[in-house]
Amino acid sequence: MSEPQGGQATPAIREADVLIVGGGLSGTLLAMQLLRLPGARHIVVFEPRAELGRGEAYSATQLGHTLNGNAARMSVDPDDADDLTRWLQAHIDAGGWPEAAEQDVTVAHLFPPRGLFGVYAQQRLSEALALAQARGSSLRHVRDEAVDLQTDAQGVTLTLRGGERWRGAAAVLATGMFAAAHTAQRQSSGLNAVALGPWNVEQMRRLDKRARVLIIGSGLTMIDALVSLDQAGHRGPIEVFSRHGLLPQVRRQPPAWEDFLSLAPEIRSPLQLLRELRRQCHLAAQAGIDWQAPLDTVRVHIARLWSQASDGQRRQFVRHVRPWWESHHHRSPPQGNALLERLLSEGRLSIHAASLQGLETSDDGKQRIRLRYRGQTQTTVVEGDALINSTGIEYDWRRVDKPLPRQLLSDGLIAPGNLGLGIAADGGGAVLDAAALAARRLFAMGPPLRGMWWESTAVTDVALQAKALAARLAALE
Image 1 (tube, helix red, strand yellow):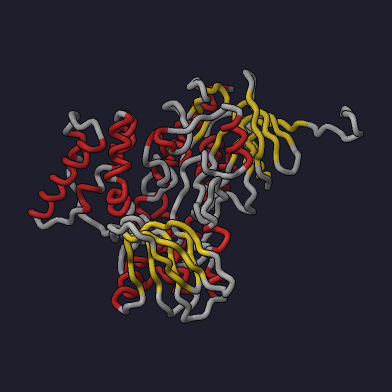
Image 2: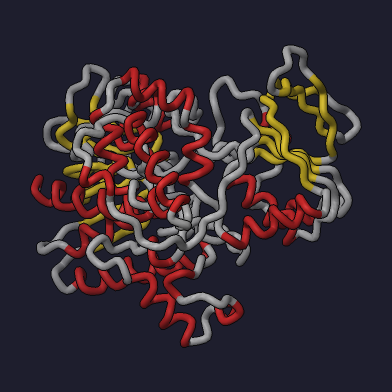
C-alpha cells in the first residue's frame, strides 16, 4: 500500500462484478435477478440502512401503513403473478399475520402491511442467494453511502462516505425514491427543519392529543400521515393543504375490462389516452360497472405512450392532467380511505386548495405557514401546533442535496430526465451523460427513470426492469 504525502495510506480498492447503489426494493430485486442467472458473480449493495429490501417505502413498521395495491398486483417475480399471494397464504397459515383473519376478502385482495411486504422481498432474496452460492456467487451488503462515482472503459469506481473504495465491472443507480419529507433539498423552503415525518408515530405520540395539526400535501403520503396520527392517539383537528385540494380515490376490486389500448394502435400520446379513457369509463358507468375497471387496463401501456410522446405533449400532461391522474391512478387502500372518511364525518379533518408560500418565524412553539388559497391573490398565515410534510416524492435530482447526485450532475456523468424527472437513460437503462451519450458501465433503474417511463415506482414495473437489466449486465461479463 502506497504512502502519499502527509503519511496517510491510500485505501485499497476492493473489487466486485456489479455495484448496486441502493438496497431498497429496486436494488434488492436487481440483486435477486442477478443471483438467479447462470454463472458466478460477486454483487455488492451499498445501503446505509440495516436491512436490504425495505428502503423508504417498506421500512414502515405500523400495521396501518399498508400497500397501496392488493396482493394480486404486487408480486416481485415478473414471471409469477401469484407469488405474493402464495407467500401470504403460507404466512397467514403459520400465524404470522393474525389480523388478516378479520378481513372478509380473499388473500389476493388483501392489502398487506408494508413492513410485511419487506419481509417477503427479503425472503425471496435469501432464497435466490442460497441457490446462487452453490454456483460460487456472493452478495455483500455494505452499510455506507456512496458519495463519488467515476467511470472508464473498463468499469466503475465508487467512493463511500467512510473512505472505502470499490471497483466493479458495472454499477447501477438503484437509489429508489427520495421522499420529500426525508430528503435535503437545494433552495429548500425549510419545511423539513420544522415538520414531522409522515411515518414517525413515536414523534407524534409526544404531541398533545388535541393538537391542531397542519399537513402539506393531500396525496397518498397524507393518508399515511393520517394513519400515523391515528395510531399515535391523536384526537385533535387536522387541516390539509395542497395546490388542487384533490384526494386519492379509494382502490376497489373492479371486474375485468377489455384491454382497449391493444385494439387502438392509433392512440400514441398521453392526451389521446386521456380522451379514450374518459370514453371507456363512461361506457363502464352506462353498463353499471366501476369506472376503475377500464383504468386498471392502462398500466401496461403507460411506458410506451409516455416514451413516444413529444416533449410538448409531456409538458401539457404534467401541467394540466397530472394532479387528476395521480389522484385516480394512485389510489388509496381501503383501510386508509376508511380512516379519511371517518375523520371527515367527525369534522376533525378539512381539506383546502392552497399552495405553500413559506414559513413564518415563531418563538412560541407554534407552526405558522403562509398560504395562497386557490383563486386568491393575497396570502394568509395559518397557525397550528404541529406541521407534517406529506408532499410525496422529489424526482428532480437537481433539487436533491445529497453528495452523489450533486457529484454526478456536476461532472456531467448524468443528465436530468424528461421535464427534470429523474435522470436520462436509454431504453435498456444505460445512463446518458450531459452530452447525451450512453454509458457503457453505468445504469439506472426504478424511480430514477421516472422521466423515461412516467410510471417507474410500482412493484411490477421495478420487477420487470430488474429482470431486463440483470440480463444486460450479465452480457457485459
